[in-house]
Image (cartoon, rainbow, N blue to C red; front, side):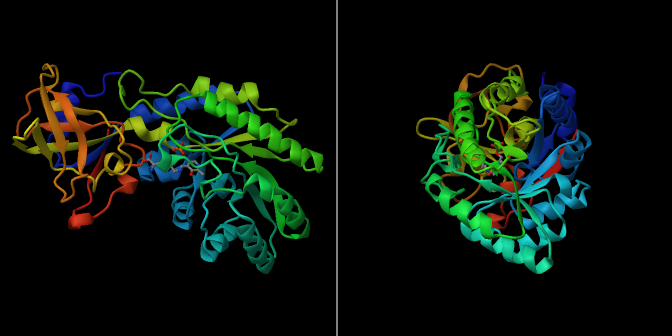
Length: 385
Ligand code: LLP
C-alpha cells in the first residue's frame, strides 16, 4: 500500500502545519482484517479509546461493530455520545473516582474491570446506594513479562495494575459478602507494543491456571478479557501496514481452555489505529551541528511525545523529496525548549531544505491524545482522507 502518493502530498501541502493526517481507508482495512480474523470465534473486540478518540475514527470503529474499552468517565461519555452502546463498554483503571463509578453505574455499562479489593468494596457500596447489581470483571496480575518498554509493561507484580495472586483467597472471601456485585469475568492486560506472540501464549497458560481456581470454587465466568497489547511495525509501516491479526487471535484460539459458551474479550488500541495516522510537519530550519545537521521541524514533543517519553522510534520521511536517495544524516528535532524534543538522531534522509514536508509515521495511536499545550502551543489540526 503506497501511503504517500504525489497527489496526496499535493492535497496535504495546502494545510497549515503541523497537523495529524489520518487515512481512513487504512483504518477501514485494518478493521475489516480484525473482523475477518475473529469470525466464527467466540471473540469480542473492544477498541481501547485511549489510543485515539477522534470522532471520524470512532465512527468507523463503531460502524464495524466494535465495543469500547475506557479508562475514564470522560472516555465513557465520549463513546456514548458517539453512539456506542453502553452494553459494549468496559471500564478499567486503577484510580476510578466515585463520580466516575456512579456515572458508569447510571449508564449500565457492560463491566467495571476492577483493579483492587478496595475498589471492589467501593463499587459494591455505590451500587447498593443505587439499588443496582453491577457487572464486574476482576483484573488479575498474571506476572507475565511482556518484553516491551518498562513504561508500558503492566502485567508484572511490581506494576500497580490488577490484583496479585496472593490476594485471590481474600478476594473469594470478600466476594461472598458483596450483595450488589455480579462477577462476569476475569481481566488481564500485560502491556503494550508486544511483538513476540509467545508472550501471549504465556498469558493464555496463566489464564488457564487462574480459571481453574475459579472453577474449583464453582464460579463459571461469562468471559475472559485478555486486554490489548499487540504491537505494530514502526520500522516499516508500508511493508506491514496491517498487523498480523490472524496470527494474534490464533494464539488465543489455540491455547485458551474455554468453558462452553464462554467469550474472550480483547481491548486493542495501538494495532487498530497506529498505522492510519501520521504527523505532518514542515522543516523550519536546517542548522549545522558538530556531527550531523539538525532539521528543525514545526512539530515537536507537544504534538507527539512518544520519542521523548519512551525513546520510541517513529519513521521520519521527507515527503517533499520522495524518490531522492537518502544520502544525508540529520538529527530531526522539534522547536520546544527541551533537549528531549527530538524525533530521531542521525536519520538517513535526502538533502532536506526549509519548507520540506516531513511525515512522522505510525502516529495514529497515542499521538494526538497525548499532545499538550506546553510552551502555550496551539493544538495541531486533524485532516482525514
Ligand atoms: N487495555 C488496558 C487495560 C490498557 O491499559 C491498554 C493500554 C489497552 C487495553 C490497549 O493497549 P494497546 O492494544 O494499545 O497496546 N502511551 C503508550 C501506551 C500506553 C498503553 C496503556 N494501556 C505508548 O504510547 O506507547
